Structures are given as C-alpha cells and as structure tokens.
Length: 169
Image (cartoon, rainbow, N blue to C red; front, side, top):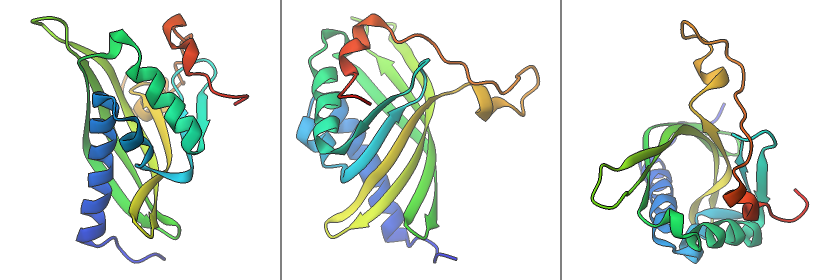
C-alpha cells in the first residue's frame, strides 16, 4: 500500500492543476505542455468518439489549436474539490471542472460542467500530469442520483473542434 501523500506533494499537484488552467486560458502553450509528463495522455471523453492526445507534441497541438480560436478568448477553467490519493505509480485525483466564457459585458456563460479524472507522476523536476480524462457531469458519475440511469451521454463533436483531432488517435 502506498504511503499517504505529503502536504508538500498535495500542494505541488494542486499547483500543476492551477498552472494547467492558467496556461490554457492565457494561450501559454509551452506552460501548458510543461504540466504533462513526456509520455502523458489527455483524453476528452465527452463526444461520440473520445479524442486522445499522447506526448508533448500532441499536447502542443491541443493548446495551440485552442489558443488560435477567437471563440476561446475570455475562457476561464475553474477546478475545485480536488480529491487526491497516493498510488504505487504516484497519485490519482478527481476534481470538478467548469469553464466560464466571457460574453462582452455579461452575463457570462458557464460553458462546460464536468470533471477531471487524473493520474500524476513525480519526476525529477516535480509533479506532472501522466493522464487526464475530461468528462461531462453526466452519465455514470450521476448513476446514484434519482432520475439518472448512469448511461454515458456522448454528443457529436462540434464542427469548430474538428481541428483538435491529432494524428491517427
């Protein structure tokens, strides 16, 4: 059984999560890439076919594509209620994730409501995301709530996001 995460490790992981949000929302592509291990995997599992990126070049493509979309200016990721636990490989976590989108002088929109399912690894230069799965706040996570069937609710990939597809995967 792994040792519990130290307070220092917990804070370092929380820092990676915050740097991820700030980098993505301010167009800092290299800052975004630096949040991931070299062989990291990012999965966006909300569409009919989940999208996947592996490695730093793919993460760079992901962040660059979003940075270059005028519709993402004013976007803010908000991550909260991060639960962390030690694993034999490092740590795993889950957290609420919402994305607000600035709309002129307001009111501003809550554009996304979901959660992250993460794995973290400790490297020579600190903690990094080894695997992040982006999920909608629907389906299995709500299976225990009255009126919910727990089925995954996948939707079509919106045409403006078609350029996010990277490589063969």
